[in-house]
Image 1 (spheres, rainbow, N blue to C red):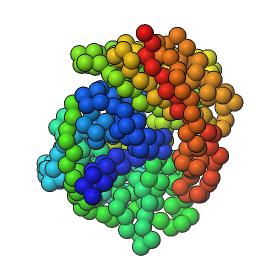
Image 2: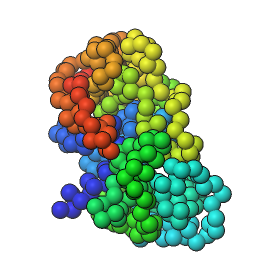
Image 3: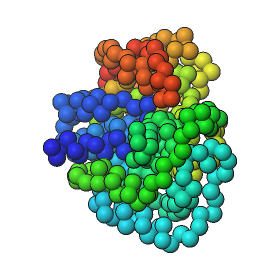
Length: 369
């Protein structure tokens, strides 16, 4: 039971682009040796890094998204639930009024006024300082609680009006939906939500391993400089953005606001890979595989899960295999990984729409001599 409960932390802040925890767990549990470093240059919500920690393996993750980095960091800290609650209580006592509370119909319908005010107090304090394990954990807990479904009786274990759990709905659509269904934001006790989630996710201790998550662009060699002072990685387990998938930040715009972004949907993201053509995309991926190779030991293994989206005609296998040519990695195996959650990774929570998923696949490669 203890082992099962300890894995709950991986769900602290879910979003739809994740691969299942069992994927990196099964790879590392069966093959990794004690002390081997695990790297993920597209760490996303930190599933690979959390799997590494769960198995006692040191780990390093990189992502350009502040949402991804905050979520990943929350999975690697070690802190008692009561400490998280005390930090939150102290912030709410010491901050009399937040400096900036978002305005507009969306915010009026999304959150109870008192909840939004307290949420902004916590946000502003965490933006000033978020170095301690308790503050990193608190930030992760709040990101995961920012939006989610109401219960049938109108109550909620989330902070928002009716919302998807895994991505933030766009304001215009949300307002229309809430008004048509006469839905109102729940009046919840913020500290109760924090306490419940702290007990759930941090109530079972996991041994802390040597680890680091950085916000950086993996195309830049400097993103790997911390790892250069370590023994070198023996495992790279990752899932790059699928070609044509450019909405990671817009789909997480509420969480992005909480970690310092604007209070509106921002579709501009200069840090993402180029999606102008399959060739450009593959070339930029290749530069990352080359950077990864430079911080890996001889014989290191690279395991990639990749797929595609329906509105791009490029064959994802071709795109990925092209990216690995002359990259420092030799492809050994390519196997099917099935469909992504039966096509529901990006399903519309409100409409319960179904989408047709493109088959995913796993590529195993080894560092070239």
